[in-house]
Length: 276
Length: 309
Image 1 (tube, each protein chain N blue to C red):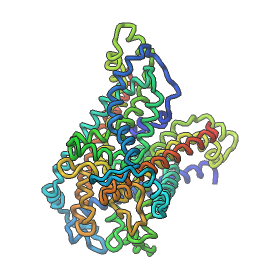
Image 2 (image 1 turned 90 degrees about the horizontal axis):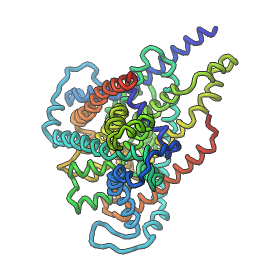
Image 3 (image 1 turned 45 degrees about the vertical axis):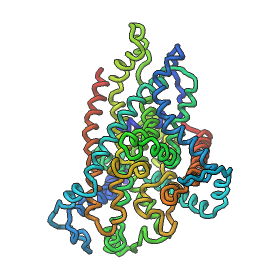
Image 4 (image 1 turned 180 degrees about the vertical axis):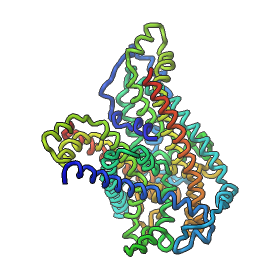
């Protein structure tokens, strides 16, 4: 076998392996989706039914019962509020970490890392106690705030990385022209790093939407998120496959749409930045 | 979809800044920029950590009883064989999941990087599990791995392979959870390492090819050493995440059968919210935080010794 044949063979093997990986990745999601549109009888059929008439009543049912619609709405609000908080607080902090000198900078950087490293329950129990006293327990605002324990360090790291790529000369020039520091942040950093900021927002949003541990402990009913609602099906795992799979699919779909839409924006942002 | 993940991979910003361009002259001005972050971090992380440490020396259980008990909680855990057993489960899960994910993710990154046509689509699709919440992943796999009605056992029977009770037995439950985590998180390793692979300079590889090096040698002596800082970062991220495992255990076995899959955080959850032993639960988390910190420090130390590039 000469070199060229060997190379072709490698490529074929690579494609085969990639296809196996794709099947292993996608089949579980597809199968769960098919269960969600099966009747109870088809869902539990053994051997499994591959061809069937789809029914959508599982979706109608979960949307109308068990507070699922409310939980979905809560998740949307908590995600939006949480991301806005992280950006509003994280952008100036990331700027300062990059371009300003102050005491305790190293300590702050280190603390951001450590906070991200520690287990959820180290924070949850004290926050549970505090929230019970302040009346923030089981509220959307309380949950969005407590999520900052992980989302804020994460946002600051990422943003700091993006800000680092902004040439310092650009800022110096603006400063000489009489811009205030805040103006340079607004009119130089924000436009230049918009794709990075979008990426940060998206990743933070996905994290919040998918979070279970904290929401489970700090919400009960009024601010219950979609992951907590889905977790509620846990006890019925052996009975209500239809409800469980439909609820799962409903909570996955927004993340997929969100990512797909945002991807376009980011690519546009990137190319714009490159042209300028 | 690919681009933003790659952009967002924080590996080059992971460690405290080395390149620090200081342009600020007035020291007072920084407080306006970091002040809000300090306040938020103060409420959400500094306060809880201090509170947890303080309360770990008490015997509070959500009632009016609040006595200082010194290190009694610590002694109780550290001398309890069940604590060590559960710590053992957590480490077993972490070592299992991280090693499988790292090997699989690296292999996938190398394979997919070889592809020409369809590479972008394949990469995007392989990333989908990362978008799914841990609790949903858990419930999905509970259905897929159902011993009698699950599709996986059905397919295994179809090709006459041995089936399993998966989450149902003490022996197979933890490997099943490792399998679930592998499906969920291998994509993270894959995405980060793919970006890493593409960022490698091409010249050394061309030189190696001219010198007649085999692809295996090129991998061993070029790819691996050049990739090692990124590998270390991925290793640290995955290890921290796995040690903190909660949702996929909560959703599949709930720590069972018996305590076969109980991990540190599911234990903390039960201790605090089922038995209301709040002080004990905080003690547990303080001990566990120190363990995580120690593991990360060992990694960083190890990373310093490893010659890079």
